[in-house]
Length: 422
Image (cartoon, rainbow, N blue to C red; front, side, top):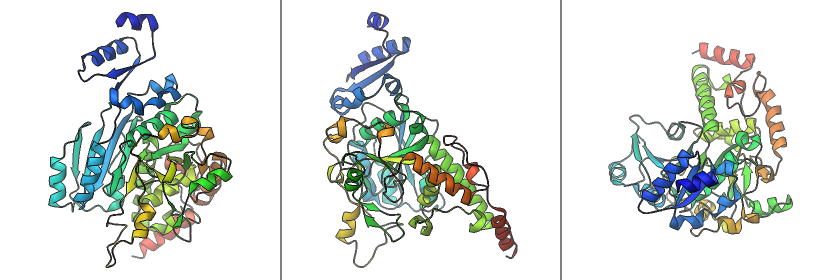
């Protein structure tokens, strides 16, 4: 085998991962000696990785760099949590090891503690965290994960979510395509902040309230295939992968916003998103993330398969955003959010041209489900920047929110005057 590597000098080697690891370990050791990337796939997983042929050598060389953390946020819904954990255990991971981190709220009950203590994750390390003080939903989500480096990705999962067995396959293909593919210019790396596992049936940010949404007619009117995946500015909270640079920037942005507004009041910054229903949200982390993506023109890639087949679904359990009533949950409301999980791998069969499009080919939409070019989104963000900050807008890709956090003097004075009156 060493002689073969010496003769061919491959950049990447792909082999079957044997049940007995001696052969795979030998190949990996030789590949390392010749500075080649070794990709070992379990025999049963090869059929789920046929999209490898769509990727460049440059992208495939990052195969083993990608580290995905499954980040679960839970409180007192042990049945829901058990369903989520079981679906994570039953997923296909292409031979990779992943880390599972379960974040329990301070009020997590005895059944939840017992469940997570007993649960055995078969695909990597399990970590448990428990808050000693009630945090609420925004800290529970935002503080649940922070990237260790620029190859670390967070799959954020509230406990009423269930996963498709193919969620990791979809995620890894997208990450390799839009983060490491040599055919992309730098725009994909700068602008794509994550990958949704969920296909929404609704638009939630229209001023008049939630409205049904079907991307098919929007895409066809724009000249795209009705099955094309699309990128939109809307962040998904019902199963999504978040990218490290953008999540760090969001952390820094939110930390400063909260710090100043706790000291001087809500009017210290003049940051809003015009015509967005998120302006009414009081406790949601997405309100602040939407501000960031609107000003930066960031986008998230969404699946768009037949009948809204998705890689995660939301069971709409009672909790912070779903209140229990005497009538219970109406079936019609549940059907607005529950989508079918992709069980059989028809990802390539349904994608136009049997591949993910390049970033410049990817349809892009704004917060309200309207097709826009990336330049148009960027121009809107640049124009609105002048209305919310006194600092000059930095080039996209710096991942530093400080240029957004320059309040107008009138806002500062009003906030400080209000504070001095108490």
